[in-house]
Length: 419
Image (tube, rainbow, N blue to C red):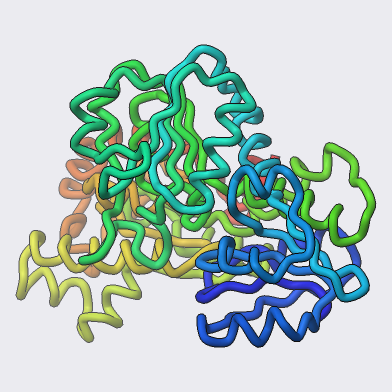
């Protein structure tokens, strides 16, 4: 390996795709077990590498020199091999600072709360100090060495101005958490003075903490921009050259659109599947129909599920499928069932990695059919439309008034998605 990334678990990493857009070198993802790290570092069989969890501190003893930023932070994420000597840097600092500046957060004379105590937390502390924060509060599971607990955070620091999350809460493959880790690190409602939230988690694109903040109109963003900015800074170290400042924005936009799902909502018969298949073909993306996924999972038609389990049973099954599809797929086209947006957790799951387009087809152009249990006839169809219309509008990112040709509708969606 000449260039690449080392870490313990890397299936979720975007780094290979990002570096492919920066410069003309082959960048590899190389998973290393803890007992293999010593041999790998002593062999020095690489030109330059990035380092991620859990080795950002473990690699330090193998380095000949460490730059001042990395020394201060106590973590290294970039190593360059120069004639057998290893030089360590921390480009996460530049990445996180770029994210904060992109969001327009003014830390001067403000209280900044940093969640987590690992290497990225140290980076966030250094960035907050460099941007003039008046008070920096670091929060962990246990109180030690100036770190406070979450209980003390809620007791003493609910007046925080900004929050930076450096924990893995909300990260793929457990965006809603599991038995070991929570789906969100804090409850945003407890911090009434918040002016902004940044999260180092970049997969999903919008982790729960960011969704919580945005629902309260608090400026917030996940870690993808940070990841791109630090990768460019690392590549400058790799190659000993500088790149134009606009490169970060360009690559961020390219990666974001390539990873973001196009989600179609709307009434049964509004053309979601037809338009979705056209979009998937035009964009060379995977097409996923959540109703078809439900049928596959249940082994029976939707009408049979309704007959046996009722609407409540169907909606529970639908929520399971949407949670899985939304987490597993990035850069796909997803057609949803007509009532999927009735549940808040479905909407949240779809928006973590997607943009929702409401296909607003005139009711007179929608035909009732026997395979739609809640829209069997014209009267039922009209009732469903009236019940759901405001919900479709409030949950979508963009309303698309469908035109006669599904190809034209697909083009309208693409024009908005790639603008």
